[in-house]
Image (cartoon, one colour):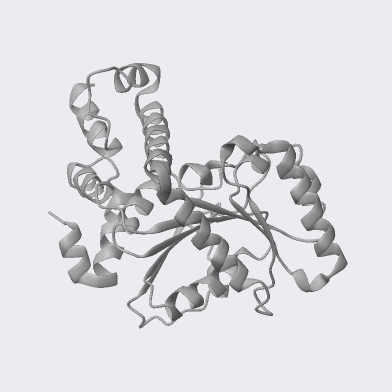
Length: 302
């Protein structure tokens, strides 16, 4: 059976094979055992990169990857792409803009097709994230692009980095949407546009002040960034590190990941067994520390 030890020894080919097996047999005994093992050994900060299509997520992802590798950090990337109507597979247009060295063993990129999911993620993103979280220093999850209801990235990432493009009118829409409740950091991209970037920054700050309670303890940072010009990336690095440090205090990271695991388990049970599964899955007396262990239990019970 594949284990984290064999994946670490096998490098990128072994990880690619393990992810393919998760996609092929997501509820198999071997899959759930591997994910249960990985769930117990988290190592990485998981950064969720989201925002409307065309905002520059892939360009910013490439810049962040370069900086993380320059710091000696290993990084795993999950890129959720639009789906082909013919095959259901991922359309890889965005991946061509993330330029990396294929021989660099410190970076691994996996594309996933969103298919019919409307939440910005693929069905298997959570499991892939949990596995890669145990193997890398940083995991970056780039969504297919969000609309007003597509906020599932908050159920996957430790730190949600939300991108806004100046002059698009998007920032005004966020005042009406649940999206304003999810970001920990907002990057106003293409900040070289000047006045329109500053207006977008002001709009986003206003939206966040209406959507986020000061009792939450973390005030989302709103930054002007231009990945192509290299502007604002130091401040973005500092904000990502500050949020990671904040999460490490007072059990916040453990609580956030516990909430995410519970939410994923509910979705998984509902998708597989409906209301009866939810009733059984949330019944008292079971060890739900690992959602994958609980899912394996339910397979034998239902």
